[in-house]
Length: 196
Image 1 (spheres, rainbow, N blue to C red):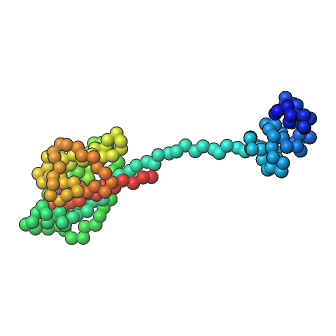
Image 2: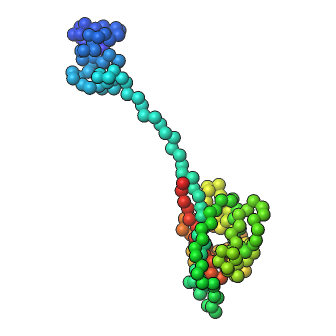
Image 3: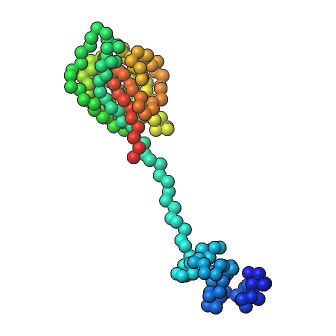
């Protein structure tokens, strides 16, 4: 408070605000000069009508959504015709099945059982595909939470987003949302990323 304010109001700068000062143009909380008729102090936001200071908003920590991956497994007739023009016939009525990817290592092939820590996608059961190798391909989760596709030297090869171009053996390829993996005679796995 300046000296001229103190003389005008009769309040000294080091004195706490009194009832008389509250009725004046001074804030009883921070003792700054305010505007007559204002609802709150422009300095400290003290509300004159209620006598309260506003509370700062509670900070809510930002949570990064958990990322989950899933594979939509079905048959692709265009892939079957491109790789096997002699006419490989699949069983009719195959519906898309969704497999939630939860393990760090996922084996794609035609194997039975689920022994060990690896998750297994048995395409012989899901699509009835006889052209899938026992251990056809592997999905490995990286430190970023995304999967990499690795062909294990399968007989018919592994194709990514193409019916004709095979991926190199034993070379991991990062997968993105919507990538399509073609294996065996007609099997297609579409990788989907979902956030919870």
